[in-house]
Image (cartoon, rainbow, N blue to C red; front, side):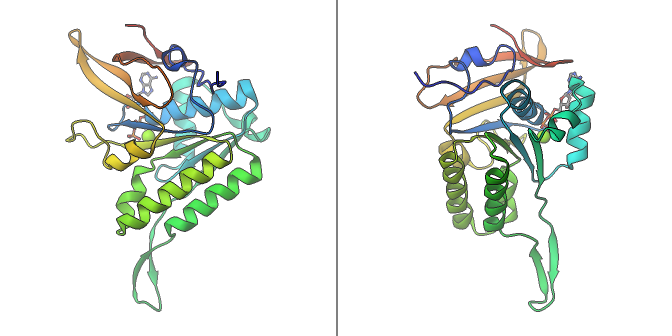
Length: 238
Ligand SMILES: Nc1ncnc2c1ncn2[C@@H]1O[C@H](COP(=O)(O)OP(=O)(O)OP(=O)(O)O)[C@@H](O)[C@H]1O
Ligand SMILES: [Mg+2]
Protein backbone atom coordinates (compact mmCIF):
# COMPACT_ATOMS: atom_id res chain seq x y z
CA UNK A 1 0.00 0.00 0.00
CA UNK A 2 1.32 3.39 -1.01
CA UNK A 3 1.40 5.96 1.76
CA UNK A 4 -0.95 8.78 0.83
CA UNK A 5 -0.44 12.52 1.06
CA UNK A 6 -3.20 13.93 3.29
CA UNK A 7 -4.93 17.19 2.52
CA UNK A 8 -6.06 17.67 6.10
CA UNK A 9 -9.42 18.74 4.74
CA UNK A 10 -11.99 17.37 7.17
CA UNK A 11 -14.00 14.56 5.59
CA UNK A 12 -12.07 14.58 2.30
CA UNK A 13 -9.10 12.25 2.73
CA UNK A 14 -11.31 9.31 3.69
CA UNK A 15 -13.11 9.66 0.33
CA UNK A 16 -9.88 9.03 -1.57
CA UNK A 17 -8.17 6.30 0.40
CA UNK A 18 -6.32 8.62 2.79
CA UNK A 19 -5.13 11.40 0.49
CA UNK A 20 -3.41 11.99 -2.82
CA UNK A 21 -0.89 9.62 -4.36
CA UNK A 22 2.74 10.75 -3.92
CA UNK A 23 4.29 12.30 -7.06
CA UNK A 24 0.93 12.91 -8.68
CA UNK A 25 -0.76 15.82 -10.44
CA UNK A 26 -4.27 16.67 -9.31
CA UNK A 27 -6.65 18.96 -11.14
CA UNK A 28 -8.91 21.12 -8.96
CA UNK A 29 -11.60 22.25 -11.37
CA UNK A 30 -14.57 24.50 -10.86
CA UNK A 31 -16.46 27.59 -11.86
CA UNK A 32 -15.74 31.04 -10.43
CA UNK A 33 -15.91 31.31 -6.65
CA UNK A 34 -16.42 27.62 -5.95
CA UNK A 35 -13.53 27.40 -3.45
CA UNK A 36 -10.62 26.21 -5.62
CA UNK A 37 -8.07 28.60 -4.14
CA UNK A 38 -9.11 27.89 -0.56
CA UNK A 39 -8.95 24.11 -1.15
CA UNK A 40 -5.42 24.42 -2.55
CA UNK A 41 -4.30 26.75 0.22
CA UNK A 42 -5.48 24.30 2.87
CA UNK A 43 -3.51 21.51 1.20
CA UNK A 44 -0.28 23.53 1.45
CA UNK A 45 -1.06 24.73 4.97
CA UNK A 46 -1.61 21.16 6.21
CA UNK A 47 1.64 19.97 4.65
CA UNK A 48 3.66 22.81 6.13
CA UNK A 49 2.13 22.86 9.60
CA UNK A 50 1.54 19.18 10.35
CA UNK A 51 4.06 17.36 8.14
CA UNK A 52 6.85 19.96 7.81
CA UNK A 53 6.64 19.62 4.06
CA UNK A 54 7.67 22.82 2.28
CA UNK A 55 5.02 24.05 -0.15
CA UNK A 56 4.98 26.59 -2.97
CA UNK A 57 1.95 28.54 -4.15
CA UNK A 58 2.42 29.61 -7.76
CA UNK A 59 -0.06 32.30 -8.63
CA UNK A 60 -0.57 33.16 -12.28
CA UNK A 61 -3.35 35.69 -11.85
CA UNK A 62 -4.26 36.78 -8.35
CA UNK A 63 -2.03 38.95 -6.22
CA UNK A 64 -0.24 37.14 -3.40
CA UNK A 65 -1.47 39.72 -0.89
CA UNK A 66 -5.09 39.10 -1.90
CA UNK A 67 -4.81 35.34 -1.47
CA UNK A 68 -3.05 35.72 1.90
CA UNK A 69 -5.77 38.09 3.06
CA UNK A 70 -8.55 35.74 1.90
CA UNK A 71 -6.99 32.89 3.86
CA UNK A 72 -6.70 35.06 6.94
CA UNK A 73 -10.25 36.41 6.67
CA UNK A 74 -11.85 33.06 5.88
CA UNK A 75 -9.89 30.55 7.93
CA UNK A 76 -8.23 32.84 10.43
CA UNK A 77 -4.79 31.53 9.50
CA UNK A 78 -1.88 33.86 9.57
CA UNK A 79 0.83 32.46 7.33
CA UNK A 80 3.77 34.60 8.52
CA UNK A 81 5.17 31.97 10.85
CA UNK A 82 5.18 29.22 8.21
CA UNK A 83 6.76 31.63 5.75
CA UNK A 84 9.45 32.58 8.27
CA UNK A 85 10.17 28.92 8.98
CA UNK A 86 10.63 28.42 5.22
CA UNK A 87 7.75 25.99 4.96
CA UNK A 88 5.53 28.14 2.76
CA UNK A 89 6.62 30.06 -0.32
CA UNK A 90 4.89 32.23 -2.90
CA UNK A 91 5.86 32.36 -6.54
CA UNK A 92 3.93 35.06 -8.40
CA UNK A 93 4.25 34.54 -12.16
CA UNK A 94 1.99 37.11 -13.69
CA UNK A 95 2.43 37.31 -17.40
CA UNK A 96 1.90 40.68 -19.01
CA UNK A 97 1.95 42.06 -22.49
CA UNK A 98 5.04 44.17 -23.09
CA UNK A 99 6.23 46.22 -26.03
CA UNK A 100 9.07 44.60 -27.96
CA UNK A 101 11.25 47.51 -29.19
CA UNK A 102 12.94 45.73 -32.09
CA UNK A 103 10.00 43.58 -33.23
CA UNK A 104 7.79 46.64 -32.75
CA UNK A 105 4.83 44.72 -31.41
CA UNK A 106 3.39 43.55 -28.10
CA UNK A 107 4.71 40.24 -26.81
CA UNK A 108 4.17 38.26 -23.60
CA UNK A 109 6.62 39.05 -20.82
CA UNK A 110 7.42 35.38 -20.30
CA UNK A 111 7.38 32.30 -22.46
CA UNK A 112 5.87 29.10 -21.12
CA UNK A 113 9.32 27.60 -21.08
CA UNK A 114 10.40 30.26 -18.58
CA UNK A 115 7.40 29.52 -16.37
CA UNK A 116 8.41 25.87 -16.27
CA UNK A 117 12.01 26.80 -15.48
CA UNK A 118 11.04 29.14 -12.65
CA UNK A 119 8.78 26.57 -11.04
CA UNK A 120 11.38 23.80 -11.21
CA UNK A 121 14.07 26.13 -9.88
CA UNK A 122 11.88 27.09 -6.92
CA UNK A 123 11.15 23.46 -6.09
CA UNK A 124 14.81 22.52 -6.16
CA UNK A 125 15.75 25.54 -4.05
CA UNK A 126 13.35 24.87 -1.21
CA UNK A 127 12.94 21.10 -1.60
CA UNK A 128 9.19 21.52 -1.91
CA UNK A 129 6.94 18.52 -1.44
CA UNK A 130 3.66 20.20 -2.30
CA UNK A 131 2.92 22.75 -4.98
CA UNK A 132 -0.13 24.63 -6.20
CA UNK A 133 -0.44 26.25 -9.64
CA UNK A 134 -3.42 28.60 -9.70
CA UNK A 135 -4.89 28.78 -12.33
CA UNK A 136 -2.97 26.56 -14.73
CA UNK A 137 -5.82 26.89 -17.22
CA UNK A 138 -4.78 30.53 -17.70
CA UNK A 139 -1.68 29.59 -19.67
CA UNK A 140 -3.78 28.07 -22.39
CA UNK A 141 -5.45 31.36 -23.12
CA UNK A 142 -2.23 33.32 -23.08
CA UNK A 143 -0.25 31.41 -25.67
CA UNK A 144 -1.50 30.99 -29.19
CA UNK A 145 0.55 27.92 -29.97
CA UNK A 146 -1.64 25.16 -28.52
CA UNK A 147 0.78 22.39 -29.43
CA UNK A 148 3.58 24.13 -27.57
CA UNK A 149 1.31 24.55 -24.53
CA UNK A 150 0.42 20.87 -24.51
CA UNK A 151 3.96 19.64 -24.76
CA UNK A 152 5.22 22.18 -22.19
CA UNK A 153 2.45 21.17 -19.79
CA UNK A 154 3.40 17.52 -20.05
CA UNK A 155 7.08 18.41 -19.58
CA UNK A 156 6.24 20.49 -16.52
CA UNK A 157 4.10 17.82 -14.85
CA UNK A 158 6.69 15.13 -15.57
CA UNK A 159 9.44 17.25 -14.03
CA UNK A 160 7.31 17.80 -10.92
CA UNK A 161 6.64 14.08 -10.58
CA UNK A 162 10.32 13.25 -10.95
CA UNK A 163 10.93 15.48 -7.95
CA UNK A 164 8.39 13.61 -5.84
CA UNK A 165 6.06 16.57 -5.56
CA UNK A 166 2.28 16.46 -5.29
CA UNK A 167 0.91 19.16 -7.59
CA UNK A 168 -2.53 20.68 -7.32
CA UNK A 169 -3.36 22.68 -10.41
CA UNK A 170 -6.45 24.82 -10.73
CA UNK A 171 -8.59 24.67 -13.87
CA UNK A 172 -11.25 27.29 -14.32
CA UNK A 173 -14.48 26.03 -15.81
CA UNK A 174 -16.58 28.67 -17.56
CA UNK A 175 -20.19 29.01 -16.41
CA UNK A 176 -21.51 27.98 -19.81
CA UNK A 177 -19.72 24.65 -20.00
CA UNK A 178 -21.38 21.53 -18.75
CA UNK A 179 -18.53 19.89 -16.95
CA UNK A 180 -15.19 19.75 -18.64
CA UNK A 181 -12.59 22.39 -17.97
CA UNK A 182 -11.71 24.88 -20.66
CA UNK A 183 -9.22 22.37 -21.85
CA UNK A 184 -10.32 18.79 -21.73
CA UNK A 185 -6.69 18.02 -22.15
CA UNK A 186 -5.97 19.03 -18.54
CA UNK A 187 -8.37 16.35 -17.33
CA UNK A 188 -6.56 13.71 -19.32
CA UNK A 189 -3.07 14.55 -18.16
CA UNK A 190 -4.12 14.77 -14.49
CA UNK A 191 -3.74 11.71 -12.28
CA UNK A 192 -6.78 12.87 -10.35
CA UNK A 193 -9.64 15.25 -11.12
CA UNK A 194 -11.56 16.93 -8.31
CA UNK A 195 -14.57 19.08 -9.19
CA UNK A 196 -15.96 21.84 -7.02
CA UNK A 197 -19.42 23.16 -7.77
CA UNK A 198 -22.40 25.10 -6.52
CA UNK A 199 -25.50 22.94 -7.01
CA UNK A 200 -29.18 23.03 -6.18
CA UNK A 201 -29.58 20.02 -3.89
CA UNK A 202 -32.35 19.24 -1.42
CA UNK A 203 -34.11 22.58 -1.98
CA UNK A 204 -31.07 24.80 -1.55
CA UNK A 205 -27.82 25.74 -3.22
CA UNK A 206 -24.86 23.96 -1.73
CA UNK A 207 -21.15 23.89 -2.36
CA UNK A 208 -20.24 20.44 -3.58
CA UNK A 209 -17.15 18.36 -4.25
CA UNK A 210 -16.93 15.35 -6.56
CA UNK A 211 -13.99 13.07 -7.28
CA UNK A 212 -14.20 12.49 -10.98
CA UNK A 213 -11.05 10.50 -11.45
CA UNK A 214 -8.23 9.15 -9.35
CA UNK A 215 -5.79 6.75 -10.90
CA UNK A 216 -4.91 3.65 -8.88
CA UNK A 217 -7.58 4.41 -6.30
CA UNK A 218 -10.99 3.42 -5.22
CA UNK A 219 -12.80 6.64 -4.47
CA UNK A 220 -16.21 8.04 -3.69
CA UNK A 221 -18.32 8.79 -6.74
CA UNK A 222 -20.97 10.71 -4.82
CA UNK A 223 -21.68 14.43 -4.80
CA UNK A 224 -20.56 15.63 -1.36
CA UNK A 225 -21.66 18.99 0.02
CA UNK A 226 -18.95 20.98 1.76
CA UNK A 227 -18.71 23.96 4.05
CA UNK A 228 -16.15 26.75 4.10
CA UNK A 229 -15.76 27.02 7.86
CA UNK A 230 -13.71 29.18 10.22
CA UNK A 231 -10.98 26.53 10.55
CA UNK A 232 -10.92 25.15 7.05
CA UNK A 233 -13.06 23.27 4.58
CA UNK A 234 -15.31 20.50 5.86
CA UNK A 235 -16.68 17.88 3.49
CA UNK A 236 -19.99 16.44 4.67
CA UNK A 237 -21.08 12.82 4.54
CA UNK A 238 -23.92 11.83 2.23
N1 LIG B 1 -16.09 32.67 5.70
C1 LIG B 1 -16.69 32.15 4.63
N2 LIG B 1 -17.78 31.39 4.77
C2 LIG B 1 -18.37 30.85 3.70
N3 LIG B 1 -17.97 31.05 2.44
C3 LIG B 1 -16.90 31.79 2.25
C4 LIG B 1 -16.20 32.38 3.32
N4 LIG B 1 -15.16 33.05 2.82
C5 LIG B 1 -15.21 32.90 1.49
N5 LIG B 1 -16.25 32.15 1.15
C6 LIG B 1 -16.64 31.76 -0.21
O1 LIG B 1 -15.49 31.28 -0.88
C7 LIG B 1 -15.47 31.81 -2.20
C8 LIG B 1 -14.06 32.09 -2.63
O2 LIG B 1 -13.33 30.91 -2.61
P1 LIG B 1 -12.08 30.78 -3.57
O3 LIG B 1 -11.37 32.07 -3.68
O4 LIG B 1 -11.32 29.62 -3.09
O5 LIG B 1 -12.82 30.45 -4.92
P2 LIG B 1 -12.17 30.17 -6.35
O6 LIG B 1 -12.86 28.97 -6.90
O7 LIG B 1 -10.71 30.13 -6.24
O8 LIG B 1 -12.63 31.46 -7.13
P3 LIG B 1 -12.02 32.08 -8.50
O9 LIG B 1 -12.50 31.21 -9.59
O10 LIG B 1 -12.65 33.43 -8.55
O11 LIG B 1 -10.55 32.12 -8.33
C9 LIG B 1 -16.23 33.10 -2.14
O12 LIG B 1 -16.91 33.30 -3.34
C10 LIG B 1 -17.16 32.94 -0.99
O13 LIG B 1 -18.43 32.58 -1.47
MG1 LIG C 1 -9.19 31.26 -7.11
